[in-house]
Image 1 (cartoon, rainbow, N blue to C red):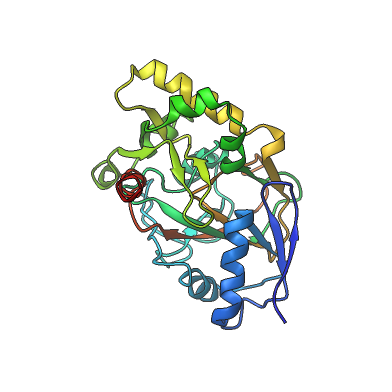
Image 2 (tube, rainbow, N blue to C red; image 1 turned 90 degrees about the horizontal axis):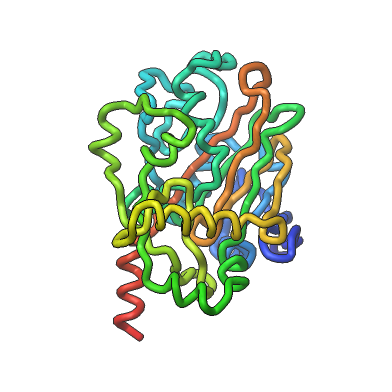
Length: 299
């Protein structure tokens, strides 16, 4: 018996049942999961109380995992596994952070529309986020389908975007929230990188926008003109008809395809209410510019 796939939105998001992620996933079942991800871009697995190790094992089926940098210069980590990013408001002792904690201030940048790791030369393929504790209100995650948004663009706009490359930087996006206190090593480890604005999604063959708050400007354009275009595209792509909002429940595991979606966390009372979320991120195979140029040369 295969998995059950229940679409949650006309464009993006489906709930997956009929699988227990605490157990090894057979190849034929994983092929069904991968096909569902290629179609729906966001998959919700309810009632999956997995351990950190079980999350890592399942995530590795999609490809090699990124390791989480020490962005804010915090010396102690709560989870003690670099394959898992601690997307929580809890300190190394498991207590709710104070309002001036550097990691809390950094993580608030996740409330901007973004695509995970677009600021890396080889960005993310997909991300997996598990919910261990959730606040009573707020803290939802919204996902925008960038394939559907691209399809809805005018033909003139599609021609304008063809071949454009944006520069992405984690420093740029966090500056929008006022965060500048990076670990000094981050500027050396993660310099600005080029990413193509329109890419072909490998899993479906569909064209997709590739956007994020990390996108600073369009390479070769006047900076302010490029930023206006990026802001225009993000506003267009995050209209309600392209967006699914997920209200978290303890035990949810959500996977999203970073190659064709943007997402953002919603506000909650992060200095009072506990929120324990743990993310693994699967690396893509190649820089998006190189992928598209290789595709064009084979055409």
